[in-house]
Image (cartoon, rainbow, N blue to C red):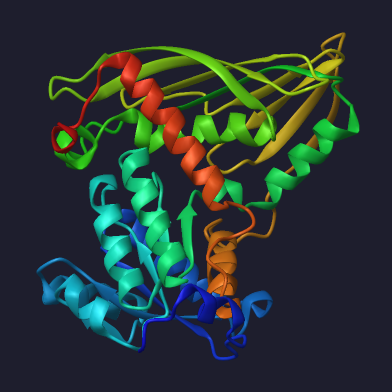
Length: 355
């Protein structure tokens, strides 16, 4: 496959054949993506859009083949380089630890492939800028797979806020915490481990989605650390402003130690909303200024796994010769990465490869 330039990519005709998707990595989240792709094949809403084509592991053809057999995937590679060089691959879902994303995404794009990069997009903003620059230079689609950005729940929650049902937003809070310290990558600073990039990223994205177009004025953050030196628990307070609106105080809490509430709250001058499970919103309860429940709305009904929405936008970007997805444009990815850099700077947390 010849590598397209940015100008060629944006003017090329739409791809009419299904987008061949390859999965790079074979961990837990790769299994979730394979399940999603097979579910999309059987769902008339997504008929003809994508096809699970290949899976690659770092150095084990046997492991890749076992994964491929389980999900009926036609091609298995025992190295990432074999995936890069296959001209039949259109879109690569990168399902490896954070520290590896930048180099792998760049390699894919330079070989003419679009990428859907699992969150966190990269380990830091510097890496993110490098990846996004390659996307622009090659004209290849590059999308961060932060699934909550693509879900129908996002639009519904913003519509509720815009309706004025809770008045002017003044306060947003989000928690996401799971006991994760049994996972080696979570504890490994060389892999950019810790709570922030794995679960804390969802709390920051929730706040960002509930206060769109707000500017971050300042933040204060505190954290505790594991024996290996990565962040274990943290709380971050942010002040966000928008002309003509009250300044919003936002609080993000995450941990790899505790079982958290997974709750998101949006508080306003007339009432508040409580979102159940910000990691895949299930419902939103709306309360008035007397703390009376006035409505309860189910969210994200009819989904396959919840991952399909990001696959749709990445596949369409590839088909249409676009380099970014509307639900998570490059500017949003970079902004969140810069916020997390600022948080880690306050903690003094530096990954070994950043020194």
